Every structure is written in C-alpha cells, then in structure tokens.
Length: 419
Picture 1: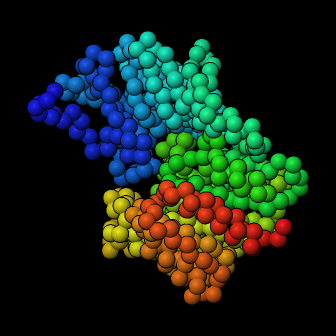
Picture 2: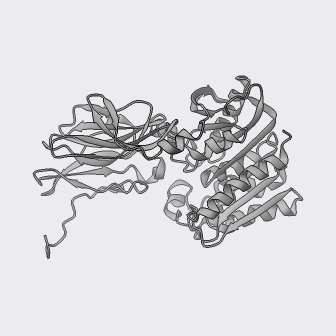
Picture 3: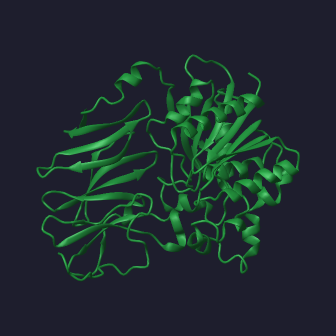
C-alpha cells in the first residue's frame, strides 16, 4: 500500500532468498501468508541447501516445508486454492516442478522425468506451463497435462532439422575413496574406438550438470571429442553433505572425482589416454588449475575466468563473506589459504600447455587472478597464452567474443593433440 511502513517478517541469520536464482517471496491468494526461499547456514555459504518456507503476513514463526528433502528449491508460486506451493526442485542431474502442501505433509511431482525445468507459471484455474529442456532438445514451452507434456512452441525445430546431435548418456562411477559420482558423457556420432577426450568441469562449484541441451558440449562432440561432464563433490543436486565435500578443501576430492570420471571413460573404451584435454570456466577454470597442478596426463588445458592464488581474491572480488565464513581470516588461518593456493604457489608442478581467458571487467573472479597464473607459466617456460575480452564481465555477452572463445578452445586443443 502506498505510504505504508515496511515491517520485517523474518529474523533468521540465513539469507531468505537464493542469491543465484533471485527467487522472490510470494503472497498466498488470501493475502494472509508469504511463501519464500529460506537460506541455509551462512557458514556453509553456497553449499547450504535452500528450502521452501511460509510465514504469516501478520508476523510470527516461519514454517520450513522442505527441510527434510535435503535438496534446493527455487521459484515459489501458490496454488490457486492456497493449499500448496509450487517450486522448482533441484535433484540429481535434473530440475523438476513439484507441489508442496502448505500443511507440510506431502510433496507431489507435477513435471518430473530426466529433464530440466527452469521456469513455469500457474493459471487461476490451475493449468501449468513450463520451460523445459532435455539433452536432445533445447528449451521450449510446454503445457503440463495429465502426467504428460504438450509442446507449445517450435522455436528450435528448424535448427534441429539441419543437424544431428551427439548422443548424451548419464554415468555413475566410483571415485578414489569409493564415493559414487555421477555425470554425463557426450560421444561424437559415427566414431568408434578411442578418440580425443575433453574433461569439461562445471562452474560454481555449487551447481551441477543436468539433463538439458548444451550447445557447447555438442560443439566439442561435433569436432570429434568425447566430452566428460562430471558432477564432483561440491556440486549440488545430491544434498548438503555431498556439496560440503569440498568445504575449505578446494582442489581435493573434487580433483579425485574429476580424474575418476576420466578413468571411467577409459574403462569404457571411449577415451584415448594419449589425447586427453581439460578445461572449464569460473570454478571450472579453478578446477582446471588444480588438476594440471596435480597431474601431467593432460596434453592441453583451457582455464577461463579462474584463480589459484586465493589470497589475491581477498578484498578484490565479491566473495569476502564467503572467504571469511569458509576459510577464516587470512592472518588467522594462513596455512589453509596457502594450501588452497597450490596451483600458483607450486606452479612448477605444471607441465600442461594452458590457454587462459578472462573478461577485462570481471568482478566475480577478477582478471588479476588469471594474469598471475599466466605469468607463472611464462616464467616457468610452459607454453601458454592469455586472452582478455575488452569490456566483458564474468559471462561474455558480446556474440563475436563468444564465437571467438569457441574457436580458441578448439584451436588450442587441436594444436597439442595428434589426430
């Protein structure tokens, strides 16, 4: 109401919204209750699970509805009758649409399956539409009708009619310590035997590869690569304990999980052990740096928007609260900060030719971090290049730069492996 004074409803120390998804609170149909996304323990930073909660609009105690799910939920939306709340649920390799009883005693899947739902809406009479994708189909709008989906848009039909997509399969394998890890494999069409193989590491790290169309991975496959896409510890979708596996331990079990994904592809007879390459962006780039400082088995690496000297991030990027909650203050816990910086402080272990890329104006993982690793490899006489995209932030937006990045990926890998 115009001129009304705001009144705080929640008082918990947790963040009452998922910062990545920007899930807004929503009114119940009768205006008496607010549904919102309840954050996790701030000391667990991005690894914490975000839950659905409701609270009386007049004030009072909040009720967390999905605490026992141990899975992230986002984008709340009340049902027309006010008896339940819709949310997008993140699970192992998927994102589905579910309906949660406001009484807190039932959760029903509305749109499930091995797919990824990223947006939806519910009409006044209860009809549901979703934006969804699978590995073989880019995002389209679907009507959810009696446990099936009816496609309403044909945005990608012309594109798909001109190409043949590489098959994508889900994988499960054991890491060094016996932990089960999942992921995806993309294999080029019409190729048999052992072929060049790319370990592509996702960002976050609190994110996951899901069952959705991925142009970048299809591009690599179209150029003759098996693409390995693991969800190592630190990833979401497997619950808070799995995500917390790298809490204050970056470059440890996540490196083991990534290497186990490569070993799995080798055991399947898909990967060529003499033509392995690795790369990623953001935490995927950070993971790349950890991996090439751990092993020399990769013939080439691409590290995008990465960091390795963790101390260089303190006070220069946007993650100060994360650092302090997860690692402690640098002057009080210097041993941990230095241990996590091993790709930079022990750069002499790196023998892999590495291409570094970053946006000039990146404030998530500022350019200075990339410049440090590039200079370290140059000083060591390791083949390296640095590409800086003018005026770009953490995610490249200019189409010509995005195309340029794809070309550089492919050219760099082709330069260092024998076909």
